[in-house]
Every structure is written in C-alpha cells, then in structure tokens.
Length: 96
Picture 1 (cartoon, rainbow, N blue to C red):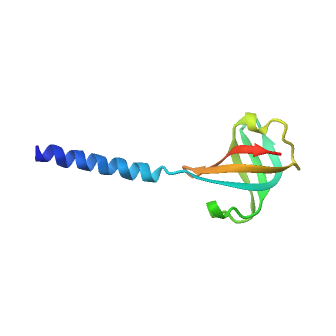
Picture 2 (cartoon, helix red, strand yellow):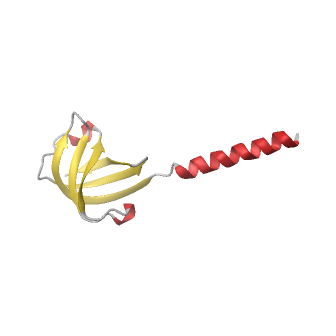
Picture 3 (tube, rainbow, N blue to C red):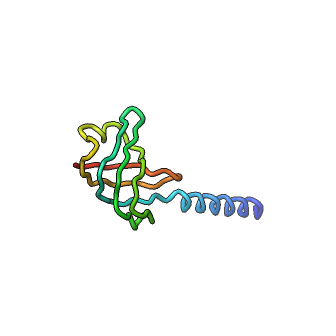
C-alpha cells in the first residue's frame, strides 16, 4: 500500500509540473501590417514593445487563422491580441 501511495503522489507531482509548464501568455498590442499570407496562416506586423511578453519593438511574423486575415492589407493599422505558447507567437484577435 505504501508503494501505491508513493507512486500516486509522484504521478500527481508530475502532472502538477506539466500543468505549470503549459501556461499561456497573452498580450494586446497595436501595429502596422507589413505582409500577410493567408495560405500559410502568417501575418507580419511591425509593433512597439509588448512588455507583457518581453518583446521589444520589432517586426515579427506571427501565425494566425486565415479567417482573421480576411480584409486586412499591408499598411493597415491594427490592434491585435497575441498568445505565446510552445515557442510560437499566434495572433488570436485582429481588428483594423
């Protein structure tokens, strides 16, 4: 019984570490669309610093669902929400 309890505690500990490691970071920002490719699901945005994600001012290629890119053109000023997860930056909201 002690071995079973020890194994159960270890298993819960591992699950707790996995849950902490999968936390998502999100932030909102404004920027200018430089390029987009709906077929690849990417948008390039030039933006100021995004302090919540520790990103300096830069031009960065983000992943995005193609439906979010409809009606958006290079040169458009946009407000967007981005999520950083698994070493990837993904736009999850986009407004002109």
